[in-house]
Image (cartoon, rainbow, N blue to C red; front, top):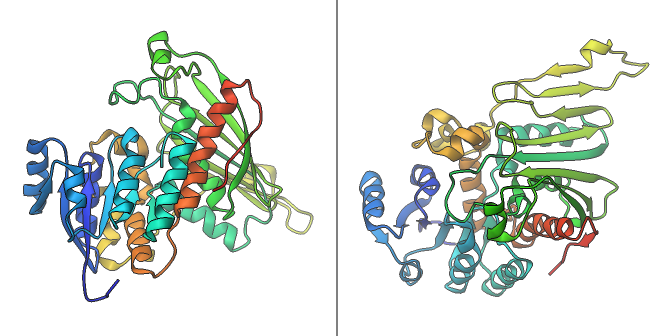
Length: 376
């Protein structure tokens, strides 16, 4: 894109999505141009608050606006695939909240639309831009973890009381928050998955998606790697404080996420004859630093909860502010739009991260049969 012209951004979905408005407004070279919401009253409240003139209640009308360069989609899960496809076909770059889609066929269709359009598609996966993930990635890349031996993710959340498309959702259909760090840190895709379902949710919940399991646990093989990863998901009828976690087991050091909110994670350091460590000192709590230094100055403050406009939104209360990831996501996406670096995750990677969960649920419904993850 021409460097003298601002990148004009449209945000679709203004609940959780409104959090990104001030980040785009403070991003160098971007213009927070338009907002879109079905409800006119809510649309005008947000538009007035942030002084945004271009407002749409009809998404397809927004896509006709030639001034819109990129769309950032924060709509309900069932809308992600079709909205992404139509935006790409309309010549817009696309950022879309997770997951990419709820079927393998729709994942394939988004990838196809991205390739044909030549535009950027990026799934806005928070965890791989969280301060915890960036910390572990830094340790790994410096060689401090040694050889990676095993990866584990878990995302357990009580979704009772959430919008109508959530009740009964198969746990693994929304697994990217725990799948993505396991794959991103190695820079590889998943190849196949085995998953088992456990327990049973309420009958009224089962009826919605014909998915009976309270918990689904999957192990997946990583392409061109001897490392296996394990992920656990639950959404209903399980007693557990919110936990979005990522563990990395290395030959020299291992990182383990904290058990409960408010604690610090743990680094385990291997004792060797050359560097003996007393047993009680092998495990040490560690403070995870913030990574605002990686961002343009104008948006660095948005890694901190104090800068969040709607800190009472349930996604923030339960997710601990998403690990300061939002400004990192905006920076990564707009850098890709400008051609400064590839999108992470790009369309193919977004599809793979999403399909691990989709194929895992298929495996659980088949009693734990191994399912190969499609490639496009």
